[in-house]
Image (tube, one colour):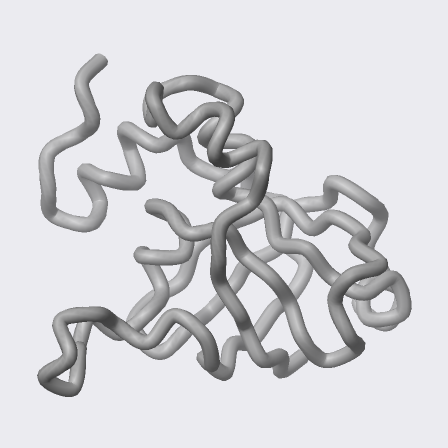
Amino acid sequence: MRFLMITGRTVNQGVTVENKTSSGYAEETSTCFMHELDMLDLGLNDGDAILVTGPCGMVVMRATVSREVEMGTVFVPYGPYANHIIDAGTHSTGMPDFKSHAIEIEPTDEKPKGVHKLMEDLGGLAYDR
């Protein structure tokens, strides 16, 4: 199912940002906040795993009900999971487009990867362990 992905910061992300290797940071940044009717259409329960396919890749995340997103739109916190699927191009602005990516979401039996493995998959170094 196709969605418009918006990214940004969350309060919980801010609390854990000093330790990007923490389970709290990984849990928050691997969450895809969705409208409950969109989740119903996909047959998802709160916390189910989803495969999110964006312009530059795919990543497994967790779907969570949010009353703050509109149908057809999802919110994903900035971080390694969002970065895994967005285009790194900046259009000469120095900042990638984080606000308007068309993505596809489908249920999956896979589990979200930990931050260390995700960073290695991107071709970079894992965060400090």
